Image (cartoon, rainbow, N blue to C red):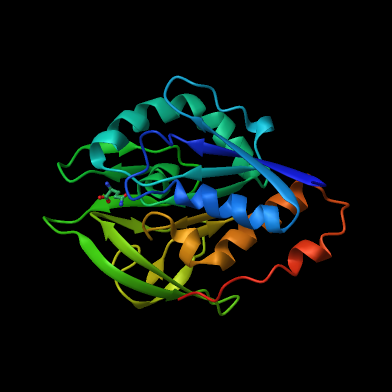
Length: 234
Ligand code: GLN
């Protein structure tokens, strides 16, 4: 195949609560249809994140316990991950992964888990409550609607340079107050949607793949890739 992309499945062995691995399978399937070979590997505890090696990072969701372990380990990868993001690397971050890209997450037991602050959001705690259920949002730039299922205790507030992935039409989203859901910063897509969200929201997968291709092959004619038809979100 003419093009290739390499995915880092960040903490893929620990942050895979609802089958987040499915996102990599969807990326691979769609990439192949675009004539792009896609490979992936897990980078986990005590391993370096080599920013130069990857085009896309997928960081899944997880429980507070796993997050407390990762919160410490990820500090050793903070610089490389931040550089990757600032250098327009593509990221898909879900729930717990989304929280740890921000400044901090307060767990259900009140413990403050540090994130890497690569994005300017922070996540506080709800009092004895979780947001659980179906959610529908609309991205106000593209008009695309995304559907998912949310299950989170944390409430997230966006910061500088971040815009929401979408406006909440049904469900709770980031915090149940300001109608925002998820975050977009540069080529980073964050969401509280659970698990293999790209299977249900092909448009997001296509944005992620196209952004990664444009970054890696700035002079290539990617018209054929742009024409890949995506299944309408259901
Ligand atoms: N443990 C976090 C919370 O409850 C993240 C949950 C998740 O990844 N779904 O908010």
